[in-house]
Image (tube, rainbow, N blue to C red; front, top):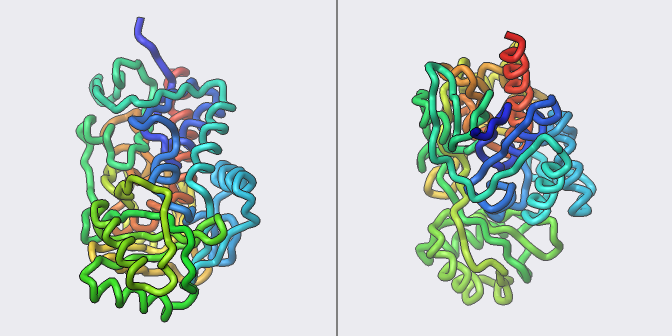
Length: 366
């Protein structure tokens, strides 16, 4: 007899963690599966050190419930007192290892959650307009939190995709022993000018939870990182002693492929701070696009405003029991440039878990 679960969550980044826990807390047996060896996704494995999209422009939590629960657990793990202002937005500093620890601890605390690691999606079987099984596991509902619409693609849903003109990937490298002041635009511009003269792609500097460490977002390729670090040590004042403990430099993908759902969230919805009667999550991060030149282009919402994400953007248009969250939600290239950040992924993941649980409960009654 084959295994069966009420809900299967594909992907264990911020959205997948939230979806699995929300579904389990709603009383559903839940399988969370990922090709990686542990939960964490982009938040735990890319080298990122800033959790974005959690807070309003005044530093208050935008979404409560699981988004706040996860953020506060991460703050306790890292000894972080609260958010940090970065330009016009607030971010939460964190350690990638702590992200993995908190995710593992929260998932382990839910008796209805069963994790399955090193388990890439291999097979999706459809029965009319429903998914009947994944990898041989019978399912009541599926939540695609893969970030690249793995389930949606297999189910034949209409997809949209970002590319290097709007969401180019980057390499994130934590650097220790940086002795240069990078707190002003002028100081950063001087470093960027030196890199440009050397023919190297630009970088962006991000704060870290550890004192004396700065995260470097590099717009080049992983194999260019050693040359970049050597140039910084040899030619840029304040970087002579910089070093990193990383030995591999994976590409961090900002966004990927979205599933067109029952409502397509648009850039106009985001920048117009649109509200919906079936809203299940909020967002206020700017539309942040990263072309391949490594120079971000930001468009902010009106002051004090936020937009809402409707439940229809978390339900597939054709497949009856397919839900999605995080970077796979139903959004166009402009809208996902805001909704892709981890704070929003946590909120949409939790909402998708609750929606899928309600669907499964209704199916049982019928």
